[in-house]
Structure formats: structure tokens, C-alpha cells
Length: 101
Image 1 (spheres, rainbow, N blue to C red):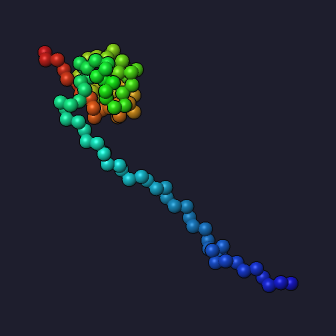
Image 2 (spheres, helix red, strand yellow):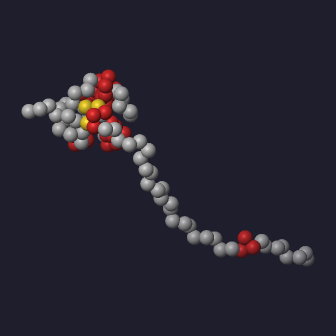
Image 3 (cartoon, rainbow, N blue to C red):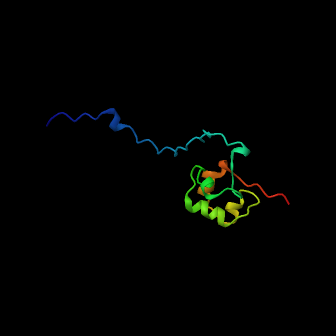
């Protein structure tokens, strides 16, 4: 009979317990929000102006125009005009100015 096989020290180590899932650190915003006067007014902008908003598509711009007027830009969510993922993409680029009463 031959010599017993050598077992490496790494094979003898007990398996390590599964580690807790890592969470991603919160990402800082890379782009500051536009100044209010530089934002696109969802109550008065035409389709072409709305399409200049980053992340805006022709269908979403059409819905914004169709369901006017808005008291605040939050109305886009509250009235089901846009889904939250689209709103989150464009919210820093839009504003809702009301007509003087």
C-alpha cells in the first residue's frame, strides 16, 4: 500500500458561511436640477419643446398636452398621465406654471 494522499490545508477548512448581500451605496446625483426659468413648462410648451426634455418620447409628450392643465408637475403622476419611471427621468427638467387668475 502506498503512502496516504496529502490533503491540502485549504480542503480541510470549513466552508465559510454565506455573506450578507451587499447593498449598493446611494449614488449622488451627477447633474444638478435646472433653474426654474430653464425648465420646460408642461402647461404651455408645444410638442416640440416637450421633446427637448431628456428622456421624453413623442407618446408621453402627447399625453402631457392632451391632459392639460396641471396645478403642479406632480399632477402627471397623480392623474395617471405618466408612470413613475418616466416622471423620475423628466421631473428635474419640467415645471407647471399656472395662468394668472
